[in-house]
Length: 119
Image (cartoon, rainbow, N blue to C red; front, side, top):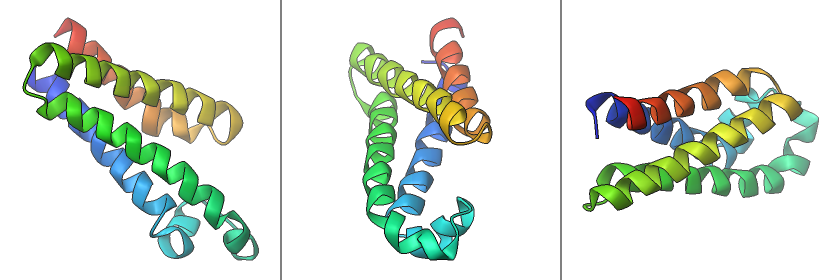
């Protein structure tokens, strides 16, 4: 796996660890501010955001396994799965929530896939 692919996969992993934290343990404080949730809606959205955060944690785990799994073929499979899921989730988020998600999630994931397969 190229250094560029490793860096991009690590970046995607870190982004999703951060999103996981914002949507779970930090939602009522920092997360609500980052996501622009009105104070009146924070309590009612907390459980759903926490659930969503767990899914982002799984995406981070797939990317991490892509970096550390000892068998290169299996590591590449985990990286491909994780990056592919992030790219699709980012597209869906851009369509349904805000376009900024496309740049935060999808672009790094697609660049990671390009680096994984063509560099």
